[in-house]
Length: 268
Ligand code: MN
Ligand code: MN
Image (cartoon, rainbow, N blue to C red; front, side, top):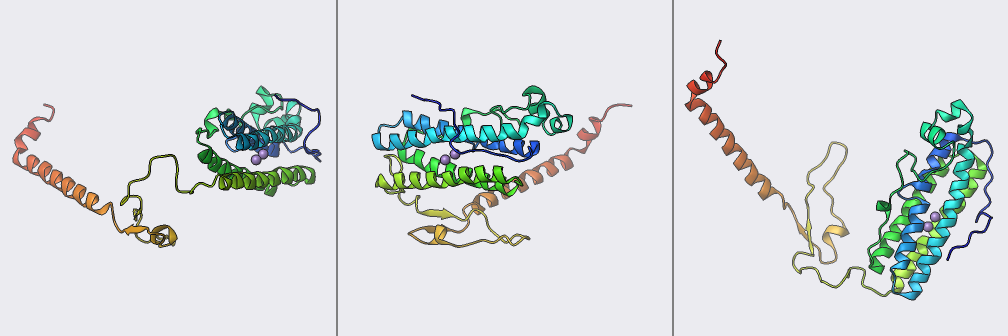
């Protein structure tokens, strides 16, 4: 059950409206890492969740994200509003100004419509919690970028609150995943194939002009990992032999039947 209270979760005050910044804010309204995506992802995961304790967590945070959506919407609306009446402001985003009358719609900062394709809902609780940890990290970095591009103290203040809450959620999802007591490498029921699972393929080799290196690290040499130096080379070498043979064949065909090729020219 949802109940709306006519009060924002965090008070929003802005100085001079900045339509261009309002447009950037839409990324957190109807964008891939925005508040609607977060609200829907956690709420729908919650509907599918058979674990009552973690279902409660998903519904708690999913519902809070709806309140965040309301804050971002209010904030974006304040910045976009001049577009309705001011020609210069309208030029910053004709879609918002002309089609939307300077109001928010569920689009991202480029005017692309929000889509349920943004949601990661697998029906496997530990897998979903990992998606949520990643989603919170993305939301955090998007808020940080918005703060860095913002000059208005009131707007910055609200964004700082929203950014802070994402870290709170990040911690909660991490704790929930950990409290399940699952081996982090056990996903689902079917075990991976021994002998293949521990192989690391060094599929990108050589040194690049801009300092790219062929690196070794704990991801490819520790914890029982077996480093396979050049998986692709035998395949590439085989392909090269085939290609060379085909070129030779083509050249030989041309050399042995010169008359045929001259006859195929259009008659004058
Ligand atoms: Mn949020
Ligand atoms: Mn969040």
